[in-house]
Length: 115
Ligand code: 5GP
Image 1 (cartoon, rainbow, N blue to C red):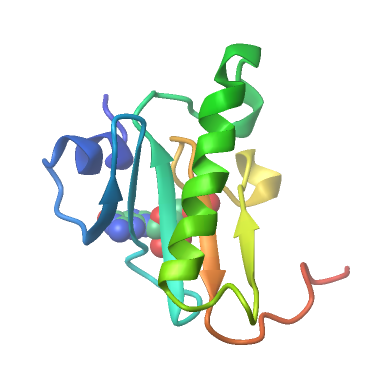
Image 2 (cartoon, rainbow, N blue to C red; image 1 turned 135 degrees about the vertical axis):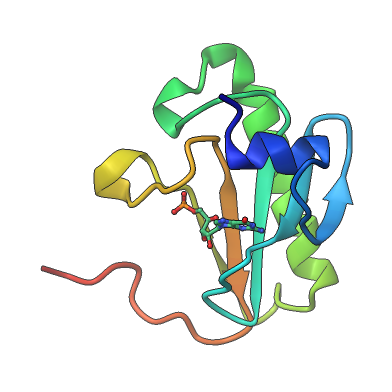
């Protein structure tokens, strides 16, 4: 079964795509946590961060470079932002297709609630 993000990459599920190249798609998160909340998703099916292979090194680097450029385009680079990859249940991952969250546009507070 294709994941939700595979369907978005294929255009079978609508999304507000703001960037696309041969390796990644970036689109707006449907439930934004901040004024800017963009998901950068590889076209390659990689379920979780734990499934990243050594050969994916350049792809993962590309995702970060795309996030950097989108942050500049969105005007949030100077004030700052957060890049997040959630992995598996304890990481709070909901969609099992690797994605990088780019979140900003307001102060984001502490990185994670301390138990
Ligand atoms: P995760 O928790 O897996 O790191 O993040 C999944 C993200 O996907 C969440 O922030 C959630 O709001 C977003 N999301 C879930 N369903 C959809 C959808 O149908 N469209 C879009 N654009 N984002 C979605």
